[in-house]
Amino acid sequence: MTDFFLSLLRVIIALGIVVVLILITLPYVIPIIQKLKFAREDKDSQVKLRRIVPLGRNMFIIELEIKGRLFVVVLTEGAVEVIYKDEADNS
Image 1 (cartoon, rainbow, N blue to C red):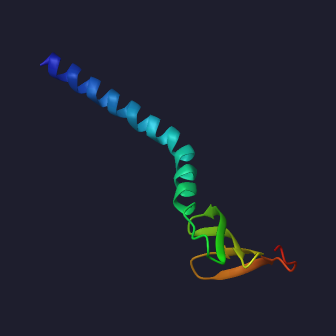
Image 2 (image 1 turned 120 degrees about the horizontal axis):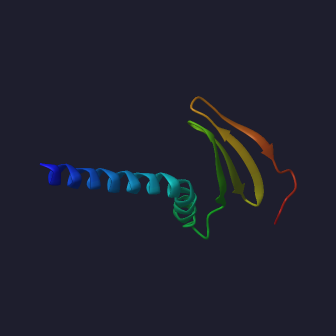
Image 3 (image 1 turned 90 degrees about the horizontal axis):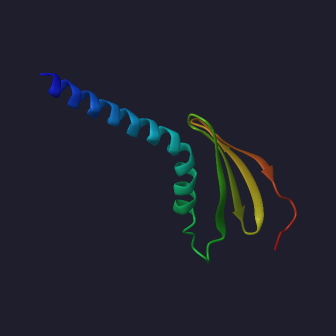
């Protein structure tokens, strides 16, 4: 019986170590995955996604470049609001 409990204890400790390692590396891996996901842009597109900054649950600041002009937008569950619009032409 004691061999079973020792084996079970080893498995539980190993599983706990794996879960802790995943939780430690997750904040570093998520931004890399997001950059890879949004890096595939159409070269002829006039709308480019420059950056997404998560503020909280279901709240984001999004930087868009539309026809050479910069727009900063706040996206929440209930609304989308432009908080900055580049007046100068960047072309």
